[in-house]
Image 1 (cartoon, helix red, strand yellow):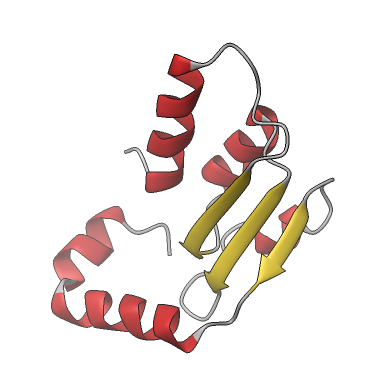
Image 2 (spheres, one colour):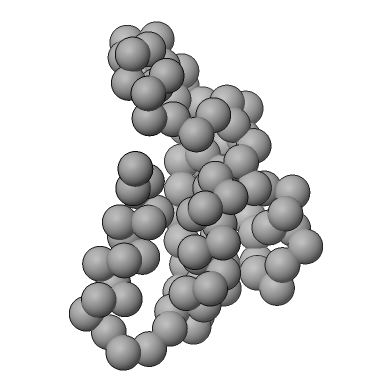
Length: 98
């Protein structure tokens, strides 16, 4: 059930005794509500999102939080997710939040 953001945050916080003040989280798609909430609780202050064409996740909610939110709207990210979705529809349907 762990998304990449959760694995990354969890691994870091296991090895540290502090929150992620000043940290930047980078995600190809917008984080889902679970990942977005975890990032805020962990103290992430900046989130860079590659694209929201496939899944907007908690993007709107993140705009209401005290976090710098950067949307790249990057075509390479859109293409990457489109290719994955096309080539691995079974995994997309089982594991994607979108």
